[in-house]
Amino acid sequence: MATVQHIFGGSQDAPSVSANEYACLTGLGDVVWKDRPSVETVIPTAGKFTNFKFQVAVAPGATKQWTYYISYGATGDTSVAVGTIAGTALTSTLDTTVINVTAGMKISIVSEPSATAPTTSGAVYWSCDFIPTVSGETILMGCNNGGAGTTLYFIPFWACSTSENVEFQSQIIMPTAGTLSKLYCEVNAAPGASGKSRTYNVRLDGVETGTPGNLSTFVTNTETAKSDTTNSIAVIAGSLVSVQAVNANTPAASDGIKVSMVFTPTVAGQYCSFMTTSGIPSASAARYIHVNSYGESYVAVANITEVNSLASMATTAKVMWAAMAARAGAAGDTYKIDLCTDVAGTPTATALTTTFTDPNFAAQSVTADVAIAANDLLTIAITPGNSPTNQPRLQLGVLYYDAPTSGLLTGVSYMTT
Image 1 (cartoon, helix red, strand yellow):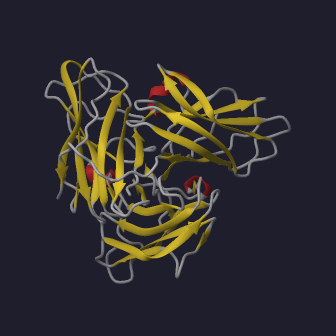
Image 2: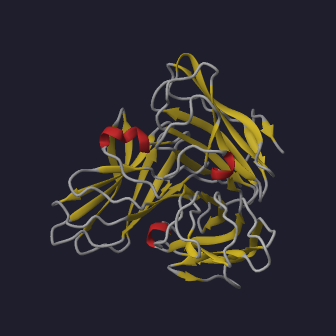
């Protein structure tokens, strides 16, 4: 039996038209396309990536193109081409190349412009599938790129973003039950002299916990990578998960801190997308954001292409959980949250919709089977009602399901490193 996790990624900005640039596989959050060490992530379990597809907001133009690669491996610099967008096209063809990976490898997306500079692409969205060696496992992968304090703060472990000092803005809300395990972390610069260290603790509902001990890693002195493959944390739907960073004795600066872990849902075939933001919604008009994001700001409908996510393969969305940091404001004030599909720039709400009516802001959920077709564009909408006097931040998790299969892949080219 094999299970599959569809990964929806995207960027709000455009990559360079004159040089190769890199992006985090699970999404760029509030970070722009950059150098590889700043945005790559570490893979927490063995498996294979396949079914790559890319889309841009603006076509590259006649005789021009974008080529996209997966950069991966022990040092993260083995590149395999997995998509091309040329001429007037907006979307690459589905690439079924299979890339085999093991735990501890690094991975990122590379954007390569043609020698004749293409038209600026605007936002880029992509998706791919991860098929784990251990059936049922899914991966949560992220990295930080600066921000937050120097002693105690919270690290992105889903998408790439700056770190946060506020835990709510760093948590993901789980839309189903399961187990967190196999925590991996890597820093670009070792902490330094004896006594300098960086500790990364997985927190459940604001508390370090785990079985038989806390799920945690500790990088010290000359170390740059550590893992905890012994401990685990059981979660339920509605659980809040964060990763707290604790620095001791002023370790050497290290942007591009990579933190990843495995989430194994209780029901095989389930997987999730997560959104948590430091941005605030509008009190007067609908705003939109990626389904997979960390630290992003919302955009108006006129800029909807900046926050679309591409589904390269068909799937089913089943549950949406959401929580706000505070109440909407006063009696009658509301915020409505929708999982939307985007057809030609017009976001359309699906049956996964929930409304926070003041004074309620605690976690709540909605269940409905929503068929997501191959090549659908997904986004999250937050719409105010009654001109709310508060603009609280939001956490959101969406549960998807694909029935387990035999695990056989035929007619594809396997890549290993």
